[in-house]
Amino acid sequence: MAEGQLWESTLGGHFVLPKRTFWPNFFSRIVSRLQWNPGAIDFSSDVHAWPGLAVERRERLTTILAGFCVAEEAVAVHLTPYAGAARNAKLASHESLMAWVFFLQRRDEQRHARLFDRIAEEVLALPGDTPDERRAAAREYAPAAILELFEERLPAMAAGLADGANGLDEAVSLYHMLLEGVVFDAGQHALLDDLEDDVLPGVRTGIERVERDERWHVGFGLRCLIETKPSPELLEDLLARAEDAADVWGDAVPEAVREHSARKVVHRLHVAKLLQTPAAA
Image 1 (cartoon, one colour):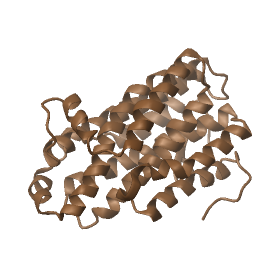
Image 2 (cartoon, helix red, strand yellow; image 1 turned 30 degrees about the vertical axis):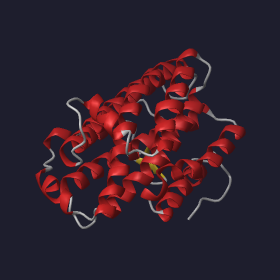
Image 3 (spheres, helix red, strand yellow; image 1 turned 180 degrees about the horizontal axis):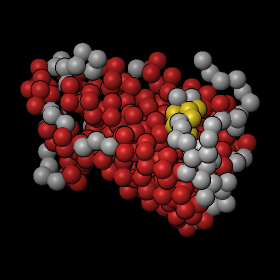
Image 4 (tube, helix red, strand yellow; image 1 turned 120 degrees about the vertical axis):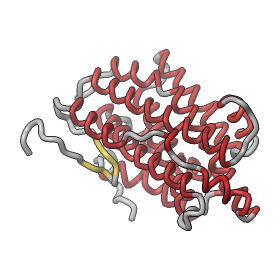
């Protein structure tokens, strides 16, 4: 492959950064293809259809969508220290470019937060005149384990990263591998499976676009782990926490979906040659 040629390598179905000097061009092209406007999605059919859904289905969807409403804002806020840590890390790739990619991801997360706020306001009809007020309402429906992960554990990890108490490998393991790679993965696929009948076309379109963004986020996190060379102990801890991460949705996400998302962790680490255990099927 010629130097400077745009290419996409994947590990476990996710984008992974090449160790090349053309990172800015590589990610400019990827990000430009993935740009979308959460304000342009039409929810009029969803608003009309929502009251007619079965009560049990509305409750299940509300649990997941409210969880995303809270979680996406949290990841958008707490990603900032990751860029600073990347600038100070000793990486095979250029540290300033790594920090720049964290900035691109943060912009995606802000877009996701706006999408789920629109869903909360227009489709779920949660009370509140502002995004903060609607997130407060969403907390009443989100699983307690989601709130603990995204409003306690993630902020603590980000604070530790900012003051040097936590390493970039620890922070990426939590953020990209568990929160995005397992929790978000399970929730997104549960929503897409549930909405296959296209009864909520606007919501489904939004989730498809979020899921597409998350693919390169997780791939980028995997590249970060490859370059930070995490200890065997950290990788063992990551694997041990994967199943618990998937279970934070409780019964709102089918068990088979939760288990599949949890197994992706060992598969990614194996394909990245960070783990010798055979990849899960």
